[in-house]
Length: 368
Image (cartoon, rainbow, N blue to C red; front, side):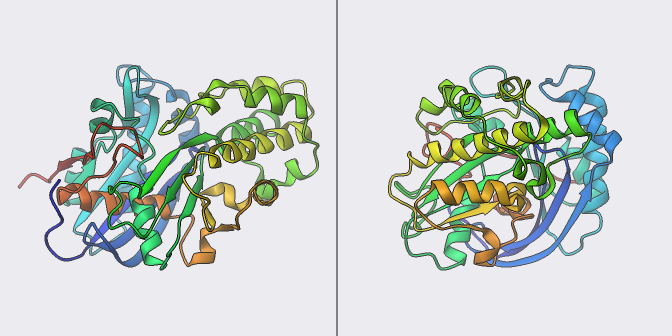
């Protein structure tokens, strides 16, 4: 693979995650190797109607009738939030994942980067996952190379891990003593299991709420061990990484708590998310010195306390290291956009299982 050429630029990254809450956007100054500075951020929430439109398209492929309305929502929301920034030379646009079957039909993120490039008048890097899947990779997770840069930024000198608790949980173990994220032994990454998505679905179904704010419902319930044990019998936990999940791969979680009261169901599903991480930590090549948690799950004190009780290393929100846990994924796609533009890999065998380090992403430039 080529190496980055040129100095650092300001890139603008955007992320719309599987929790379907809205669009995160963030500026990052980078040369595609190191982080030079963090910049402005913004958040544009989806309205309840927009969320319903996106939810109706989950699991659908591009030819399904539900996809066009979802694509319109995604593109409009991104145009709105990204137009509020100035000074960016490049945009990283992830789109909205609707379906993910790396061993089946591939991966589907809706949203047209070429249309966004026209609207913003800036080059847009998008469709980050397809090339990885075509070359035999899982197409996810894609943040690990950015996590490696973050570890360098905070001055880490020993193996550590990042845990993103979004709709799905994903873990990056890394050794910052390695020269680059694609170097042998530098990174291991994989999806741990479901995280917020099934808990959010439970709250929507039972309470008409988008999520269990502050773990309030779970804190008043009891974990039902039988349901937790059945959950951990799922074959996914026995697969060796790299491995990845679709948002709804663990729909059985809702079935396992169907007969439970609301609080016990929330407590049990929260314990399932924590137990999935504990199972995943057993794959780490060496014990991490610390675990930094990003994503919405770090704001759930019940989930965080379960992780602290079950793991042997300090478990802290990424803010403890001076990072922004709400914006880390948006920043990641700003970083990855620069890597794509400069011919650097965005994933490798130990992060997605792809056969060789690959730079994913398509670059669309505005006409004229």
